[in-house]
Amino acid sequence: MNAEGSKFSKIFRGDPWIWAIIIILSLVGILAVYSATGGLAFSKQGGNTEFYFLRHTGFLLIGFGFLYLCHLVNYQYFSRVSQLFIWISIILLVVTLAVGSEINNATRVLPIPGLGITFQTSDMAKLFLIMYIARYLSKKQEEIDSFKVFRNILAVIIIVVTLIAPENLSTALLVFVTCCLLLYIGRINFKYLALLGGAGAAAMGLMVIFLLNINVDNMGESRIPTWKKRIETFMGKDNGESNYQQMQSKIAVATGGLLGKGPGNSTQRNYLPHPYSDFIYAIIVEEYGFVGGAGMVLLFLILIFRCIKIVVDSPKAFGALLALGLCLSMSFQAFVNMGVAVGILPVTGLTIPLVSMGGTSLVFNSIAFGVILSVSRTIQEEKAEKLNAA
Image 1: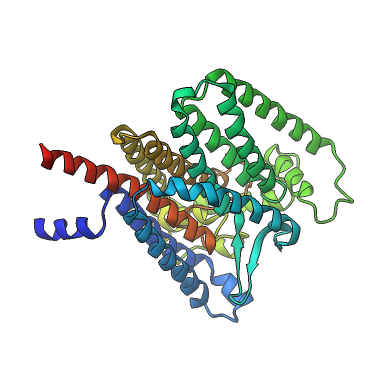
Image 2: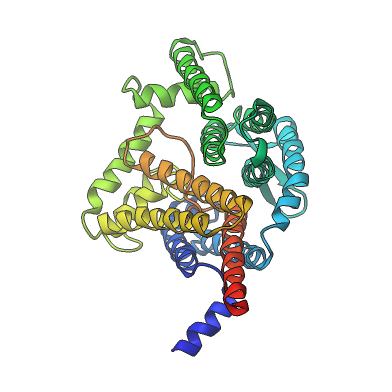
């Protein structure tokens, strides 16, 4: 048994708890997507219920390949990679706004010629922005209190968030909040962060007031009417599509009970829009009950705890900031999805990493997990070398 455990640890290096979380999330995602895509398969694929199951599993396997390769690379290399790819990401975000394909009336993706799939540039930008921030903060620790450091890193954050926001506001807000928290952890002067937080809160307040009072009848395909409806629904002022979505989601959660209806037995998947992505947590709770829903929350709490342990053990600031930043980004995204499903947050469109159906999002989330494991693996190996040297 010890020999088998040793062999496993040599092939899959890094924190075994994080490996376990990745495997469980992937398996739950495969089961949930297969169950939730039945209606979509009949409407889009002529009843071929295996199509989306195989597609999701295929992207998951591709993602796992990238994850495995990334976890073998010394995490310090990601510092160099981020310098180039943050600017490539910004260029692609601009191109996406200009010529990207529309999904749900939002220009969020670039088609990949010849492959018949689309590329969600915001996922790439989010990943490399966190890498870039971790690198910049770790390099500037000796002058971290200066306004110049804060100004320079804030400029990059604002550029990325501004380019994401017009077509994917929820992702932009998630990225902004994660980056601000990373700046705090990276010891940026709290006075600057307080001013930024106040400005951000004021901007959000003004935006809500603007959306509640604007006439959107002649705005066509703009995202502004969608934002307005979601805010009004959350405030109980609208009974439109967003309210319908959350009502169906609440029914799924309420009928799940303690242990759920069992895998594949969801009924609300036939009524919920996007049960395989935006509302997949509702399907999980319906089929696996309170136990399954609580288990999902617990997995991401354990992930945060294990990444905090990486921060404590990391001898270098870059590794600590990198692992925690990526962990918080994925965990916050998952918690927002769960909050929407149970009705405590407005509808956003955010998914659960490795669980919701996706293409490039699965790949980039897998890369993020691979980078976290790379930090964990490098720390473990450095500890082992010190012990052997002693």
